[in-house]
Image (tube, rainbow, N blue to C red; front, top):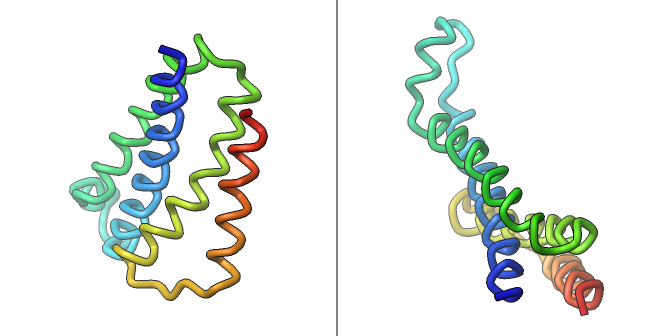
Length: 114
């Protein structure tokens, strides 16, 4: 059962990264010359807001079971997920140093949680 909560901690960071990338897509469409209500119709902004609201609910569930320091170490995984989403969704270039850096982050999370 413990590993289910660890898996959920990883899913939470996946959702955080997904929400941030969707927010970036929505930010491209924001028009500050129009009223705020107009910009709230932006589907990307609405989806990202929903995901940002969903994450704390899952976080509370996980933090009831695992230590906060262990849970918080998983936040580093959002760097990895953001790199993947930036590459696949936003078509950003990923160089070798970013890949190495993210592999080190993943190794750090694994070692910290052994």
